[in-house]
Length: 332
Image (tube, rainbow, N blue to C red; front, top):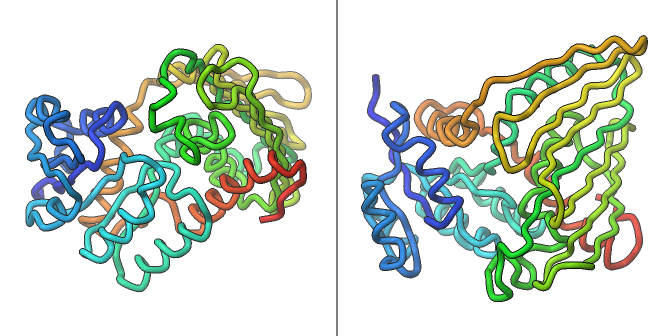
């Protein structure tokens, strides 16, 4: 078996540690060897525990000959510049969602990557969730007939989690409440399951949070296929993960606790009311995501999220707060 692909993580915070821990000393195909932080002392203990060399800047990690690829788990607003730095160094990069904050910056980053022949892709771990891959197969096979509507909900309770000076609630980092942290998963899921989004209309407002974060966001979408979709994001309620696909032959409903992986179930209901219930074993989607990135580096496997899907997703992401501010639908 070939040697494991070696990666560096940029941002060893809560989520960065989740990504590292998903594969470290578990995977035979990939491992992390370095971590980048503007304050190496802050992450020193966590890095040492995981066997990581620490760097105080991205250029230093890119110059390390042991590093074969970069994973960005840094603040969203830094992604565009960091992607450009990785591409200039010729190093593949996996970018935590959101890829960038605007379609223009996403297009520029992907264009530079394509010109340089460097792998750049987006981390959308929910594409690896077993019920979602099962639903995708059902839709592609026509088991639900013509898809009419996708109803999605990704809600959580972040009350008290963030202080007013936390980067995740800084202006521009988390537009439209839960959009950057959770809702973007369903935007990508809608594209993955049903194709491109063509129009977005959104309502978003803050009623209960003491930090500058909307607590309720509702989005309706038109899809290029002619189907529609909806997205609900609440950041001050019971954690909820839900997808319902309505077709002319029946519906399929996925439910789970957004805070507890492996709780998802799917119930398929035929037009006559017959129900079939599916339960799924827990599956480490972060490990699958990081291993897929390593396989793309090592074997040339296709990028886990195609460039067209990244661009469409960021266009929808950018349109949600703009629609909420203007009160108008936004064509993509």
